Amino acid sequence: MSALLVPLSAPEAADVARFGPKGANLARLGHGGLPTPGGYCLSADAYRLQIKALGLEESARGAFAADDGATARRCALNMKIGLMDEPITPEILEPLLKVWNEIKAKHGLPIVVRSSALVEDRFGSSFAGQFESFLDLEDETDFQTAIRACWAAMWSTRALRYMATHDLDPADTAMALIIQPLIPALAAGGGLSQTVEGGMLINATWGLGSSIAQGEVTPDRYLLSREAVLTETAIGPKYHAVGCMHRKFVAPKKSDTPKRCLNDAQVARLGGMLRRAEEIMGLPVEIEWAMTDGDDGDGIKMLQARPLHVGTQEKVPDEIWRNHPRLRGQPAGVGWGTGRARVVNCECELAHVAPGDVLITKAAGPAMARILTNVSAVVTELGGSTSHLASLARERGIPMVLGVADATTTIPDGAQVAVDGVAGIVRWMV
Image 1 (cartoon, rainbow, N blue to C red):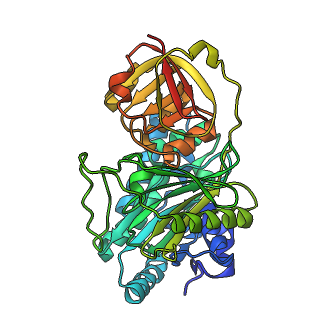
Image 2: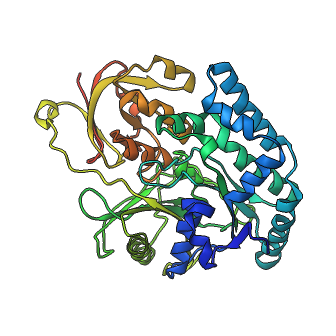
Image 3: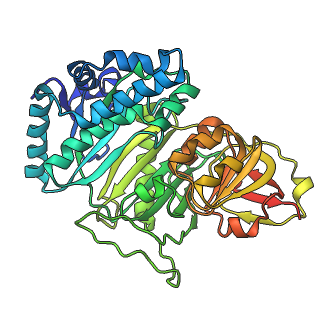
């Protein structure tokens, strides 16, 4: 096998400088005894080799170093077009196709390609949802396209904006990749190994976890003690599910009674895995997981672990707001913020959001990360505490409450709003 591709089970896969924090952390979880889907890491050197082969080094330097905006935009566009449209150099493609054939033959499942940039999943710069992942790849041509698209995502507008706010130059970093068999999940979600109250939290939904990451559903919320004892359960409606070809999901109807995705044994199993992931990483962590089958949780696989920003319980001026209406939701876990409510039903309305406003919207995916630099708080009707945008809000210390049913129709546009991102309470003045 080429030195550019290393099995996640290999000791060298934990090398952050070669395979990025996401890939290295996943390798460390597996080395520490936690179940993962396995697979391979494609080194960041492959990305550098592709850029060199395409003669794109000058464009890479010009994206942030150019003196005028037009030149910078043209350089970034050259990077995206070159990486997306040009074929993968044979030195990289040959071992990639060997891995493709090996995983298909061994597992008989679709393949996943995920970003593992050298700058993502670090404390203070998670890049949650800012790059690309491709699931359910069945065709070799689609596989190659996914590789190129993940490389090109380094130069997407939203990634470049995020890098600019963190004083990062894309020319100084590189994109490694993770290549794995897809887990045909019955249920999936995320978890936080520490909450402000001192416990742990697990989110879950039916099917693949992308619906949680993108803020498309209000997931189940399970609170646990540090000893992995279940202390509270809130069942989310989950009227949307994403499945792979091996599991055809039919989203529940709004008339259906919501059901738990996880039983007590599965929750306890995940709680123990959260604690173990924290021990391996040496700090509080946020995880992503997927479960195939197994009433006792034996079918659970760890997909990702990143450093977790843990907020503090702030003293809030609740006496000012106590007699005002309130709604509850799932807290992102940081802060208290107030401001004018700005109800947004379409991304085209984001231009009306002024500095210090509280954004009230139906669903907020990671593509809306740019709004976090402009608001005092965020409230969404869908989503959960482990969505990508919730991760970015914790990173920036922005109060956020998700899964607040009917927020856009109940909270008046222009009203003064208070958002408790720790308790998960939204109040407004009438």
